[in-house]
Amino acid sequence: MDVASTKRTRIDAFGMTDTQPNVRLVANADEAGVVAASLLAEFAHQSVLARGRFTLAMPGGSSPKSVFAHLSASATSPDFPWRQTKLLWVDERAVPPDHADSNYGAFARDVLPNLPIDPADVHPMRGELGPDEGAAHYQNLLINVLGTHPIDAVLLGIGEDGHIASLFPGAPSLEAIETVIGIHDSPKPPPMRITLTLPTLRAARLIVILGLGSNKKDAVTRSLSGDPLPARLAASGSSAVWIVDEHAMPVR
Image 1 (tube, one colour):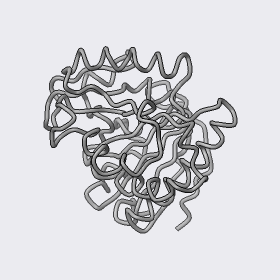
Image 2 (cartoon, helix red, strand yellow; image 1 turned 90 degrees about the vertical axis):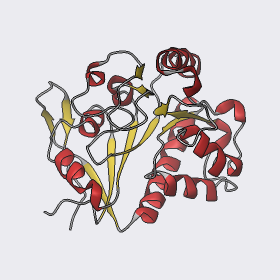
Image 3 (spheres, rainbow, N blue to C red; image 1 turned 90 degrees about the horizontal axis):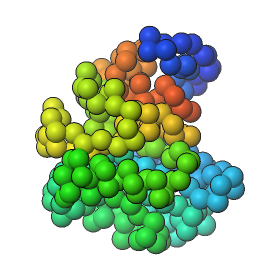
Image 4 (tube, helix red, strand yellow; image 1 turned 30 degrees about the horizontal axis):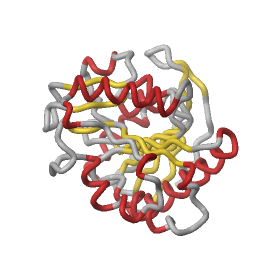
């Protein structure tokens, strides 16, 4: 199966300029981690050469664990510019960092100790502040970290319903124009969250979306077919790469 897509521009139903998805087919989650880590490393070098730094926004959940593992494994190598990297998050649950549901908490426990990165360059969302205060705090933080620049790269995992970050199908949050918003009624527990919005994600210079496992096949199929699920909407405004394993890949 040839999954290398020829870029084809069109205007979707939302008036967004879109391109035919660029899909990388892999065998499993571990291979997805290798491919994603390689893409991010190459793009990080380009960003450092162009702008002197690399900003990466990461999700929680299970999908990116292999990516984190491979980035961690290469931490002692000069291949990744850790000293010029600033880590951000795409969303967070409104819980303290030591809570079992905390995206940052899991990262801090399982990955961060292996990375040669200055703690001052790690910028988690403050879930303990609650959805609204936490969103306001992170919006100010992004202004300080990014200035007028967009995030360089965003890593996303697609949910079974096609959600990304804490942006769910049909939710009013999809219409938000702010940089960061608080969520009070997430259909997936816990209900209170903080998330980057579609405009913020679309502005990123690179989006890498992971679709892994048979339970993601419907969402991946619909997204790649053009259904306006959050994952497809987020990818429509940037240079996006979908990394999909054989279990989630739609039949062609």
